[in-house]
Length: 497
Ligand code: HEM
Image 1 (cartoon, protein in one colour):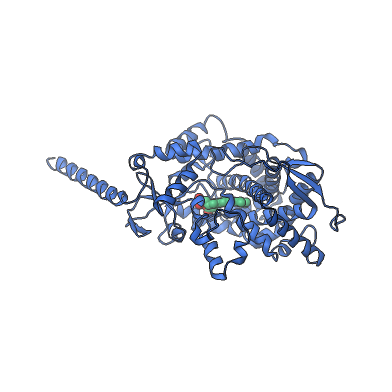
Image 2 (tube, rainbow, N blue to C red):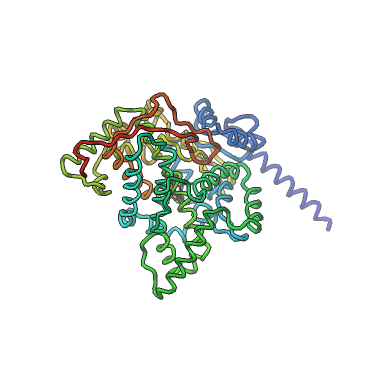
């Protein structure tokens, strides 16, 4: 009994000494005074909507590591990206991901993003990765074509188009086509059916709050799920589609053959019931829509916007497409294989991704046992570190002195070696184990829609002085207002194509 107070005192002293050691190590890292003591400095900027710009300016003034909270560090050196997102030893996902989970009656239906158990994540990703390979994307090419053709048809029948309305319609229709082989008809009806886009948008802005208060939010969402049914219409729709497809498959009385992503997930469940539980099929279907719709729509919108603001680049791209058509090396709709031979289109895609800064948050990871060296500092175990695209993608050492300008040519002028460095440092699709599984889909959808639009249509700003703005509190860089473009059918050699 007499040993108990001594043991408690020893434990207390050890904890205090640990805190002092950690504090001394992190004290060497510059950052706002308040961030040493509280995460509320970061929360304040997240909710004010100027987080990215604030962190960027801190990195500009104080170097590659900025302390953004008592145990949080923003890493701004592109050469350290591969270390922060290394696989061995793996840095586990930070707290912020806890909230990226759908709940149904208290049951976690997380897709890959919200899967914080790394062993489970490895197993699930191994099983479903083939559905997202480039070869698989080629199998879904007709789905991708259908949506892109529908987009172009809709645009050519209008004189003025709000791209922040139409690109999201296209993106969600196209994601639905890939996931369920059915088009929900957003473009046909020119409306946000069932408020689906609104739900997705609400979810991504809620993520900003989750990032600010992850644990509180997780418990809140869990508790709420007992009373308000599935977290929104989107999960409800996924539930309905998964159940009815599973019923159909049962009647077929054979192992499913994959036609769309849902078929693939169901097949994975049938073949690996120990790895893919029923609720995982729902979670993955849900997050496929969530992760793949807005991101692709915003990326296309920002890319088109920057092309319009840089007419020489727009002209170059259009000329490359026209030349390919004139030389008979491109059909309509162009195949992905044909498009992959166009270097300027590739450069525009990369520059769009670099510049669009879709993810507005540091992708947090936790330093493993034993700590690790980052930017020459020893960072203690348990510290959260993460890179932010606003900082990494605008690094002049990697992307050139004009990194702040939109200039696709940088990808063509760079030496082979430099281009590889530029690609390796880029985090537009994340990095390491949690790299975007849908990146081939995103690329395929974007280059299809962009090239088909430019082959058929002449586009220009409706108002030359208008600016596309993004003031929303959102984890993705959502344009917040309509942005109108003027559309004119091209009557040159493509008219009859
Ligand atoms: C331009 C469009 C897209 C962008 C910018 C984008 C961006 C990203 C980023 C940055 C990550 C890593 C997040 C992190 O580590 O915290 C990620 C992960 C993910 N993305 Fe995408 N994405 C896009 C399109 C898509 C599409 C079309 C799909 C589905 C077909 C998709 C599905 C996913 C999934 C499931 C993950 C989680 C992967 C994992 O944790 O292993 N994304 N995405």
